[in-house]
Structure formats: structure tokens, C-alpha cells
Image 1: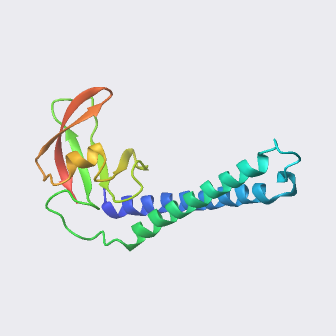
Image 2 (image 1 turned 90 degrees about the vertical axis):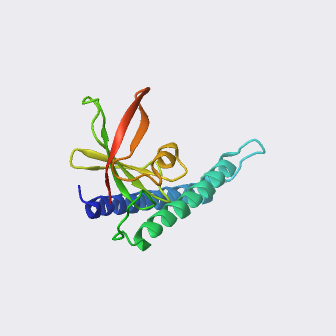
Length: 161
């Protein structure tokens, strides 16, 4: 797995999120400002609810844009000895062949996003997440235990890029 391939897929996914958020914000804005949103009586709250939705969608656009811009400013060519922000980490299960290897990209934003590269999934985790906290500062060969399907599984750090 090449880090550059993962980064291209993540950037593409973040751009898709931004485009979708912009479309949703435009739809919500149109609903909030249409003639049909004018209240017919004091109990008609459709216009008010539509304006709240439009505001929330606008905030979502800002968040998505921040994530996308942040990913486009980072120098991903740095070499790491320990897990840090912007590292791609591969974990291999110890003593459990039923658990496949896991890939994590430590990111300062967009935590929770997962992207598919071939048959592998790459999970974006922030340093403040539970998985991120367990990985930060570790080196190749270190062991990490993670919960998988309600059971604790021991992994070995195989790659830090």
C-alpha cells in the first residue's frame, strides 16, 4: 500500500464531501427563502425550521472546506520513526489469523472517515481518538491492543510511513 495512493483517495473523498455539503446548503437555502416558507399563521414554523437547517448546512460546508484545505497543505513526504500526525500505520494481528491487518492514517481532521484502497480499508483517526491515543508515539515492532467485535486483539505495528 502506497501512502501517496491513500492520500489521493482521501483528498478525493474530502472533495466529494465538500461538494455534497455545498449542494445540501444550497437546497436548504432555497427552501428557507422560497415563497412557500412564509408563515401563514403564528403556528406555522416551516420557514423558521428551514432557516435553522440552512444555517447548519452552511456550518457543515465550512467544516468540510477546512478539512479539504488542511489536507491539501500538508507535506506528506516526511519520514517518521514514531507514529505522529500524518503517518500511515499498518497493524498486523498477533496470534489471530482471523483478524486481517488494519491501516490507519493519523490525521488532525476528518476523523472517522474510511476509504477503500483495493481490498483494504484505511481509517482516518485523530490523535485525540481512542485508537489515535494508543498509536501516537509508537514505533515499528511495538504492540497495541484494540477492541475488535467486542474482543481485545493484540496487534504489532508493522509499518509507519
